[in-house]
Length: 287
Length: 156
Image 1 (cartoon, chains in turn brown, purple):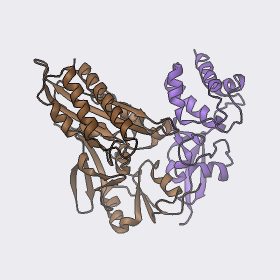
Image 2: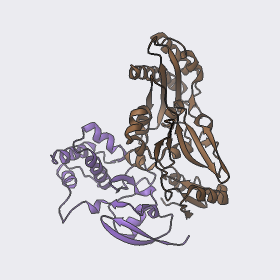
Image 3: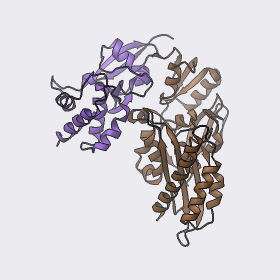
Image 4: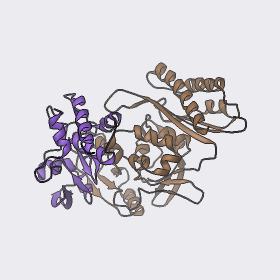
């Protein structure tokens, strides 16, 4: 299978990339890892006139912390680059576990987190953990930038709010409060790709004094047209003492509030089971 | 678009090739450089037959532009033997009968090499997880697993 012809451009700065995007608009596609882009081009699902490679721009694969301990990840951070980062592994273990589930060794070495989000697959593994971490995306264009919460980034299956002239310049994760931990649980198809059937991320903050839930965030992939937060279930938990009964209740609320497009019975059942598991694991980590 | 001259580092040698930008590393290896060890099967990143190492890490050469492979040290199966002596993994694959049709073998061995370079004594599960991106349609996975185990214990 061949990639159809295109004009190849390799800017050296983000500004240059933005001005190229402005020139080509919908005729251009951004190249990061290429694992989605070139598959689509080979299958002739998209035929861009130009491919703008970000790989000539320095330091886009950086992971760094600002003075308030928020993390910023450049658009060329690969899944492998993330899971190998010692601090990321320690602070965001469940995000790393989700990224280890993505693709294969080869795909994780090539594919980027930003590319995965831009592809906007409803079953994207990284999305559920990033949703509960309340990640934000910095989108830049030639004349400015905007910050978009990941939750508002996805608008439909394989659709995002990203304009053709924009580039995802950074993925930001805010610092976590104390007594907080997360968990990622999933079930997947038995196929070569092993696409996720239900992915559940939970982030909990539990008051160590009285075991009440100060903050609960539940994110799911593959159970709705986009990766989503289960807000009704989160409200069920907030302020409550974390016991088996309330956890069971919250898991049931998740199962009711999701909108699976196919295999609804199975997905609702699995979501319920995985939410319970994720909550228990997160609580165990908090201790 | 016009051909561009690119510099590739392959198996320790530098080579200059004129390529159109849409050509994949796999195409250039096989068609321009005569290195036919890397194979094309699915062409879409699922099977791993086209696996080569870039700076020691396994990548899919069918989804990598040759032009983007510049500046990286590329290792193909042809680069594994040293002075006519097969790599321990190659020997183990032969000894354990881990090669049937052979189509997946180059990718399997290169990915296995990167697994062992990172962790010389992986568990069976770690090997299986590591090789999940390399499909063998002859389904000789047990022998392949045995071969990688044999090569890993051979390294002590």
